[in-house]
Image (cartoon, rainbow, N blue to C red; front, top):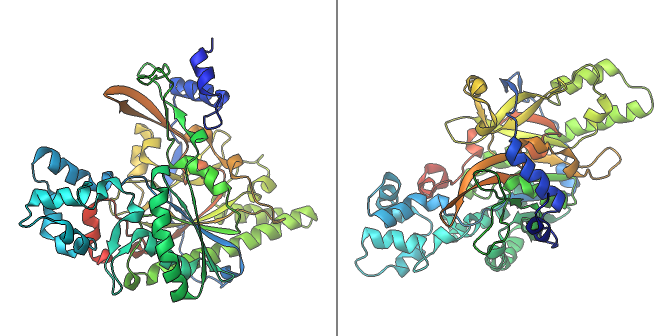
Length: 468
């Protein structure tokens, strides 16, 4: 029997549908299967090192840069909050204090600090609203780098990057996904930056913002998998992770979409490898797409060399089909070209060969939580890491945009243990944006230099050499 409170909760325009909620409740009970990885992708086994990439002039196509921008940067400053709460000095906080003058935000901070500020004062004025309030702002609005023209925010660095590899037809199109409470702050910053960058580059900036749709939220449950009710007796919904952003990505109208995280930026003088690599990924993807389209047209005209197509699918598109798999279906899918860096110990997903229930093997980005204990030895054989460096091609050979929602593997979600006002609950994330949400894409992995991966996951990362 369907409880009335579930039906009532699913009647608004900004809520999941009743069918979605019922499916989610069932998924909590049954769980999600582990991903069946067969081997780690390595050089020569799924990861390519192109020796020569033809110039395909991506600037002739419609391009958008897509930047998933975080909510509040609380995790970036977690150690600093811990110090304020406990009074116990930890290595990150000690590092920040000892190198405080190296941070791009220092000039602004020192104007706010009280006279004879203590270590506690310095940290409090960084993260709380008595000072910079950085612990409650999104990473995009934080000052990451010093420059000759003043401190640069992460958003500003993305604007600068966009002009160097994502400009087309005289325009720089960038789309940021932002938490609703931070839209005003983003818009205010963009209003101040865009005229400056347009004057510097001679390009026109089209910047758009969107939020994760509330319809993509997922229901929470108690530890025994019954619907979780909040303090007012209402069904509790939670944001469903970055995988929900496939809806935002699907709304974009472009030939080529670059995807890069908000915190993976570097100063102007360290950007050469990034610009070169981005253009190489785009050119390589256009070359692959050109061959895909040629094969599909040959299939239409019954002139296709089927053995050649099978070999191309296996060696280039990261797909090892079973004997009864339709080749046209494999070819006619969205394409993503993903940069992969050598794994130096950063947490996150990596490239693997994955076998589905039909016996097909494909290249996928897999998180460690998706891998069963019995297959952890394969995980440890992985040499490469996913830095979220994607170039996506989302039109078919007739020029029609794919509906990306039709290329998701719904069985690759996550269930985690959370709490609400001290009460334990179970939460669900939708298939990750570059994991299960792109599981049915053609995938190409390219080895790229580690210098293209310069994230700021914790505040002390901003004083590493690549950010100075």
